[in-house]
Amino acid sequence: MEFAVKQASITNTKSHCLIVAIGDSGKLPANTAALDDACGKIISKVISQGDIKGKSGETLWLHQPEGVSCPRILLVGTGKDSERNDAAFNKLMNKICAALKTSGASQAHCFIEDFLPQNRDVNWSVRQATLLASNSQYRFDQLKSKKNDDKPNLSKIIWALSDADSVKSAEAAVSQGAAIAKGITLTRDLGNLPGNICTPTYLETQAESMASNYAKISTKVLQENDMAQLGMGSLLSVSRGSRQPAKLIIMHYNGGAKDDKPIVLVGKGLTFDSGGISIKPGPQMDEMKYDMCGGASVFGTLTAIAEMALPINVIGVVPASENMPDGDANKPGDIVTSLSGQTIEILNTDAEGRLILCDALTYVERFDPAVVIDIATLTGACVIALGKHASGLFSNDEALSTEIQQAGHETFDRVWPMPLWDDYQDQLDSNFADMANVGGREAGSVTAACFLARYTKKFKWAHLDIAGTAWVGGGEKGATGRPVALLTQFVLNRCAK
Image (cartoon, rainbow, N blue to C red):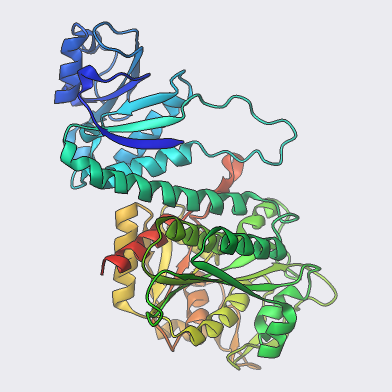
């Protein structure tokens, strides 16, 4: 999909499709009113006939209108001004994209100024609309023997502005939106690939490809022998039950000054999680290929950052492994020693994400990071607590937590702060080791974060539990690409500082 921004007069625009707004109760913004005059009041007529009332999300096609150089007009209701918020804007843009998919138009002009949410400017709206339109085109049919030939004709959207002075900054917003969309597409692709293809070795190859494609990215991968020499007993205990060797993937994006401290993103890369000896129930176990979406979001975020050539240093670290049952796999009651020297009693082998993350978090101390954010589909408890709308946010630094919340607000890729109180740490007590890897049924997402907190005392750290937001289950199952938009915005905001 191609995107552009142009200053345009609606009555003089030649296009395959004009997309215009209608307010609540048929109120016409200036652009729509001018188009109505040029078309002999056809828009007013369909409103008076009750075909469209301007309710948010309503759409109506007008074909072969007289008076303009355009074979079709898409009327879109925007609802009451007081209800025009971010969520409503996202729904509107998705409605527009769905309507365009089934039309014969190969390009369209959207007069986006008439769709802006309250308290948002043109640049935000253009970037968000670009991102949403790109996502609407996504499909995953690479592994089907017969491709879906019913592809939409639409190949270009022009965001039409009345003010020529706004075009340049809006063009930058389009570039940002397209870059983030590219990162999200990669994240979704990696998440949707099956576990027999997207193995830790496959992710290693993907990281090497990124280093080849972007001059500012360099890649290093630690093999199991390397990790054993370092003492990563916790991470390696998870991969023991698998025939696929574990990898610790490190990707350096060097866009800032050499001495600038890096932002470090650590993504859980569990390419398939059977639960190990504590095996999961059979139904929906196929969805455990998505247990590497945290790692996939690191790949996607670095892609977006590299596409924008941001002037900052970012390091992506992905501990990658499978969790499988085997004669050599972790057993409940086993005790392993982490890279930090702390010992862990494994009470449940299905709580393996924290076992690979804790060694990765200890490893990144060597980078003297400005901040560290880990991203993981860590707990089902977080899904119960927050559902699919917000990722769980835990942090040992209040300012960092606020930054992440702000980035989530700006992108509508939202998070919700959760407690990280010492009160919960007692649940991780073990009779035989420094800690247990689970803390019981109560506050499962909190005790998982408390476990990770024991490995993050030397830097500012935040943990995003994306178990509810990284994928959609059921009949529409698939990876969402979250939280690439949030993470990229966080880095953009750091650049602005």
